[in-house]
Length: 407
Ligand SMILES: [Zn+2]
Image 1 (cartoon, protein in one colour):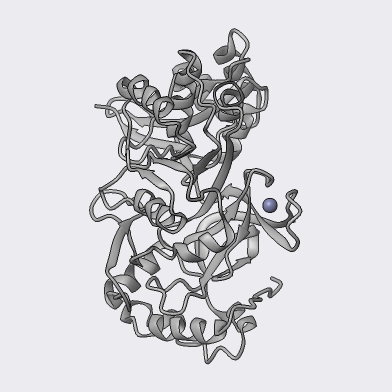
Image 2 (cartoon, helix red, strand yellow):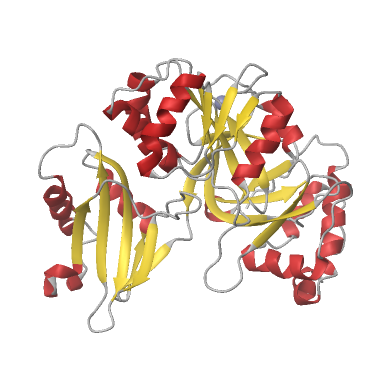
């Protein structure tokens, strides 16, 4: 592994040292950090073990962080059954630093926030905190149900909305509906997005509905908070990291984050989100290295005893074209073996017979070929064309993999 921990941020070493001391004070983690003598420089972080979600949750439970100023806000980053996994941020949610670097909004903007509010979800208040800094006029809409699309689209036209923010899988059907019923949003200049990868389908609808609109993205998590920003001139998977984020790419291209925020609340020290990445030169012309995110590496699923790499499988599904979005669904049945389904949202130019074509392709590929389950039980594998993927009703988030029990 090459050591590459550099930051020009003032007090960077002191902040990392501080975080290490906090983690060392957590009884459940003391053993992990016992052998780390001291951090003489940031390069010494190479000796610090990476931490994952469960480690951070153990630390937060023990440390109970409190903000120096204002309120301490609690947000969730999902979780399975039982208690949600949480992260903390002070009033303002660290957005002043984001505003320094990323300016899609100004005082003349009329900004609609469609991220779901409540439920301890962070994106809606995060973007409100950003809007506060810009002096724009805000509309805290939250989740819009499909039955309300037409009503709100008329409202957007009437008000001359200039900016809409949301997860791409929430924005896609709204803009798609506008195209379908012939609504134009000529004043719309910016689409703010975060929470999941950009959906290329939006690039098909936007030129028709809102020719001026461009995408502006944020990348991060409830644990790290915003880690990077991009603009319409950047590739949609490439990010300019914030000065307070010490980003490192280690073995297997796994990204880890160290927070250099003095008095930051989450003790993020070489924290792995599960994303892989690489350093690139961004197409936008901003000098220095930019972080290209290659997707998650820890989402291997088990299907009838076979390990499936979800990202690789979905890349294979999309390889023949005609696919806007796709998702794997594994359903466990009480009375029979599991079923693997691929849900596919077709692109506008999708050919007829897309489902059959994808099915044949997968069965002929390394994913289908060696898997005798598909031969023994042809119903074990299905491709279904759908209008929308399965998503979290609250946040609009779409996972690459859905695992569920048949009822
Ligand atoms: Zn760029």
